[in-house]
Picture: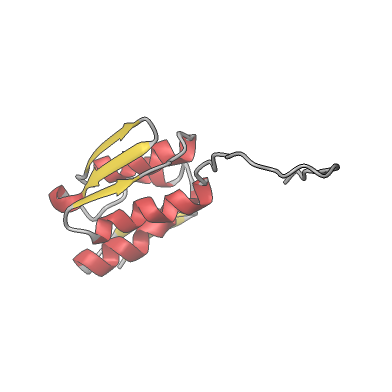
Length: 119
């Protein structure tokens, strides 16, 4: 992280925008599975990992839209507890779907690095 060095006797004023964090939004996207309805996440960065998480949500049956940094997830339409292997192996953090899916549906099948796990 950079730093600002201020010299002089002037008051500082202004505003900055704080960008959304991938490390914060990935668990939030997985947690939308717990809600049997609509979740809205604002200030979401458009990154490859975020796109993969959205793809996983769609594959398990969620309706998802992503426009201008706002992700809307309708998880009332989930029809699968299996996270597709091809998407799971693309990103290690896909394992964070394990807890929310297992909690809501009492079963989950997800590819873990090296093998499939069914609980």
